Image 1 (cartoon, rainbow, N blue to C red):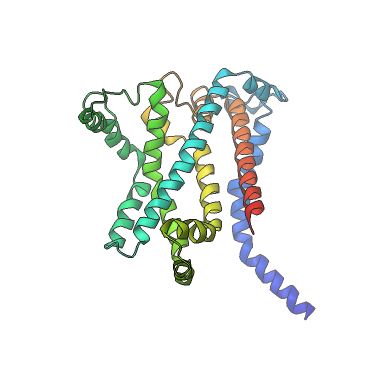
Image 2: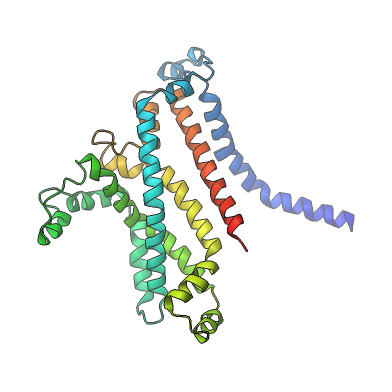
Length: 296
């Protein structure tokens, strides 16, 4: 029996070894390299000659802590995570419930239509959304003008630029989470709803006491995935606003990109990546802890 168990263990390791090797090459080694790089002054001159690289200890982290741009980027990123993440999950859940309703017809069509933005390139969508947000000829201002609201410079006003990017991001990404919620909804037994109805529960009570508890694991997955994606927000501000106006849409990843690939301060850029990694890890651990505490 012991020999058979060892043979099964070797077979198991043989199956997972390719995946572990790929994770090591494409995740563990880059993360370790970025961590080491964050303690150096690696820059454009170091690319030409590694001998120009110096170990500078925590200087990059000290410069980061005293940089107003870092705190501005961190504030903008947290704003996007706190507002955009829950909004995206709420819209995804609403769309999933609507599509899962028994009275809805053409469900495959709606699933495909809602999922289409997620697989569409952001550059193509940016052209459309720039027209929608145009202060003079945009569809959004035209619609607001019907109800008497004056034109708004959505991407040029520092107060409206980030909400505009959040709206674009929610529209682009809610289709993926909608499919995850839809799978969760379809796994809930109909008997639970029938029993709740026999007890006199209305639609809101069935949603609160049956749907939400049964979707607990789905909420955890969607919450963690959405939070990680929100912390890594880059394409939307890079394509739509380049971090402006007045740095109101500068995010941590965009700041890291500018420091690393525009000014070639790769050591300093690596320190931003390490801070972002720690923030993402902390947020994930908090969500998992809250889920364990709320589990029955």
